[in-house]
Length: 182
Image (spheres, rainbow, N blue to C red):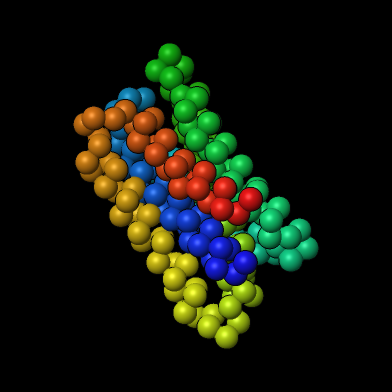
């Protein structure tokens, strides 16, 4: 069903945007909670961008051979695993351990986002060959929408929710796209 797959892709890119927006706001909490330097926080945030590139390049190279469904499953698992790894932090752990957990959690999150892009773009282009640009625009409208939602989570809920609870909210659209695809 072309329409169902379009909206599943829309929700997946929305989840990526929400997670990106939330994580962007949490870096200051992580800096305060774990005593990281600006360089360490920048490196943790940068892990998201480098792994996004790996996900989109590698996913783009293998999507026709591996299949879209296996890449969507991988992206979903990377998203969930990124949250699990990030939630593994504790003020009882050393700064090095928390740094590693946040770095790799953020890396996995970016990898999930890149893998989704590697799948969603050719999927939508294949499903709608006569109106490709129109439907790719619809698909990608979810990215800034997700950024706004993620930013609003940090803006409005920072005082009432812990950073773990704020991050957990990105799992709602993640579970939604998982259900929609599966």
